Image (cartoon, rainbow, N blue to C red; front, side, top):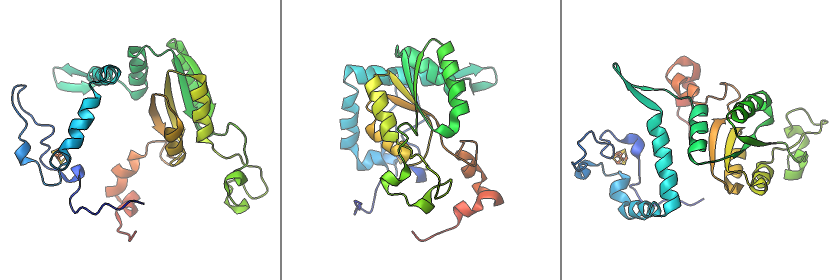
Length: 236
Ligand code: SF4
């Protein structure tokens, strides 16, 4: 694992200033000099310029424009102020249509079979063709990647298929879907999927076996006794 030797590195999570997101008029300049020492705008100005130049590529710029347009359309101003109006599934559908995607791939966890059926039906009713691949496709036993008998969830004497996110990714690559939606992949399996999938993708939901696939609930509850263990200090 690479070790970063520098003492100062980007730590936006500590920022109180948010110079990058100022409340100023359209003709004003953000107060860059007020940025904290750990601000990536101080530490990585060259990287920022290099990244920015990627948007000069026409396809990247258009994709980014549509993504930000979609973001804009997720809000509305009413007399009480601004409010949100689209759940992520609708946002995803609208974004896919903006891009002209017709064939949607879903990479899902077999534990979310019910959810994937609902999602596929919704997408089909909105006019998309749906290609889906579950994590167990291949039916390869877990022993293939070195799991021991006692490390299988259902028990040592039971055949247990491994999750193969690489298989999911490669099948969707071959199927040439326009856009991929991840649904409920596990930590690590999702990492491999993102490494091998060469298609534009988004995530509808991540796996959280305890919290209804809403991992942020644990953060919200970490200041209450229920999940205070999350805040207990540990040596690495
Ligand atoms: S980019 Fe700079 S100003 Fe913005 S949150 Fe990060 S540290 Fe703060």
